[in-house]
Image (spheres, helix red, strand yellow):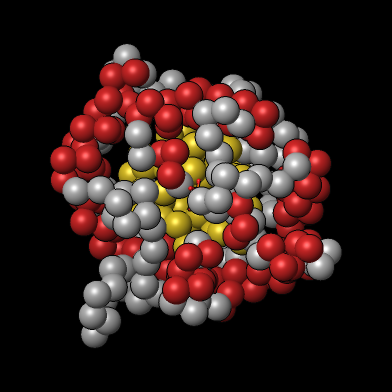
Length: 241
Ligand code: PEP
């Protein structure tokens, strides 16, 4: 499977941050290697600018969330169709920060993933346990429940990201065995061809190790995707298949 390395910029970046993407592309000598997919999900304000600027560059652009509806009275929201209209190819749904900050349920995440597919976007559906759930030995149960509730019912192309909540932005990561266990478990739920990304404190220093784990088909990277100097070695750490 072609690895996917995705950067989630969260609520970071003004229009001048395009320089970081240009710096990344310069490191690739103009175009990302075609044996891996490279995706940047900037804040919504930058999606159209980035998608227009990099349409020829083998770097794809995605959103960080979408509404379940195509349009309507939903102040402040953006629909999947709007993201697709300005050139996005992917959208993250069900990130743990949205599940926590906006009380997003599995049912809502599933509806967002379905809306994304209808708009022609590939949803990246995030799941992952909290620290307390892992300590109590419930990581697989929690991830299993999230998958059952959040995955779209259609067999269209989607991506799953396993992101233990306690590993996001903390510098902590599960052991390689724990990552392998959860990814093997997720691959039992996922239709063939679905890529399963690992996310949570992926850095240049641990990317080679993590991306070599069985059933890890790429990474969803937060903090370390903001700077080309950090993101480039992570992109290049993915083994080519
Ligand atoms: C994320 O927010 O999806 C993430 C994985 O963040 P970080 O890499 O900063 O832990």
